[in-house]
Length: 321
Image 1: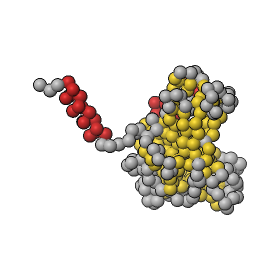
Image 2: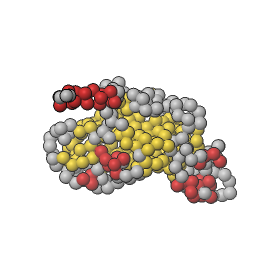
Image 3: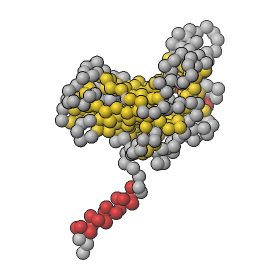
Image 4: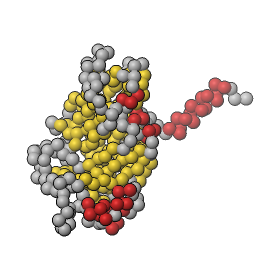
């Protein structure tokens, strides 16, 4: 007869074998922008606002493969006025191997026309959204989760030497998240959607700010080559949240247990019992946006993933650690 203790030991060994040494935290949403529906087949040179105007269903089409949500297209017209001429492309599918995927989405932002292309990420529900990171514990809103993306960024006629992309803003009435380049690095800012003073940034136990921003630790050399950007939120037993931004050239994995790819960091508590202070429960958009004023901005977006909790290692673009 096998003893209860022997059964437990055997089960533990089986679990370890099944885990195969993987670090905790698999994605709850994983999207690769490779156009599985073939939306771009009729537009090999790129898609302009006229295509979306003539065929509105394009905006409803799924342009990313994966799970946990869907990726779709959006285009903002800005100051563009139809004059009979063909407007420039705002969206394009690129099929080279530079990002180590079979295809990726190219987004344009043209200053002269105001035309801007976006990828819209819509989670299947709260459980695969950024809102899943949050819960209320002992009078504080805690956060545990991660987000990463694989991209390339370039500007034509940049107004300054350093590239300064504005990666994305996740708005809402709860906690807002902005990630953008700043002073040669990358910063993440969390702010209260109602501008209420709920953040304890000096960690004295009392709320003293309506926002918190990561402090730069090292440069993040953004260029026209493929890159991996990751945001990690982790809450200690004390209720103190650590917000970290990681950046890595190439499409390789990011090990959050080391500081090699750590570019900025902040610690704070969010003093509130209001569960609505979570990150947004819904969609968010990523576009080709810059904090300077170049003539044209180009963002190549290969993949976006959401993790809960934040993984010890954000895998490479293929999912390998």
